[in-house]
Image (cartoon, rainbow, N blue to C red; front, side, top):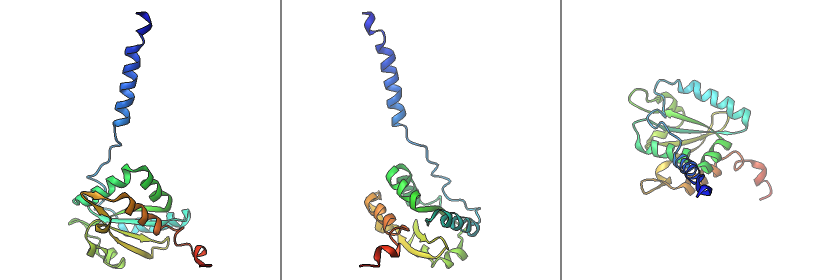
Amino acid sequence: MKKYLWLPAVLMLLSAGITHAQEKQHLDLEHIYNPAADAAADLAKAQQQAAAQHKHILVEVGGNWCIWCKRFYKMLHEDSTLLSEAENNYVIYYLNYSKENKNLPLLQKLGYPQRFGFPVLLVLDAKGNRLHTQNTALLEAADGYDKKKVADMLKQWSPQALNPAFYTNQ
């Protein structure tokens, strides 16, 4: 009987480990976008960071009011493969569009991406030039987003994919 005295302690440790593994990182989906941010200044900083790190800038335009913006953010941040792909190739910036601050002058400079609805993704190079505007409706699947479509979009607009050296002999 004495040889089983350790069993409750082991079961408690296993239970704690399972509970901890089931806990997801808490994502604050109510404060993704900052209506008070100086988006132009923030994008200038993102350009400096992108240039230093040889990355592009991924801008997600949306608002804290937008359920699809929250779904995209949640999907990206809960999938370690997608998040790694994004963070390895992009400086990510969440550009606010809300009744408090629509950032219309900046969106005008970026080609009026709000015409696609929200969220809308922009890929900028390290100099702030718009390379691509992605209508996220084309990335949807049921009540969320298709992870393969999102991964493909991230790869197809990454700095590596746009490297001219890959296309000189084709």
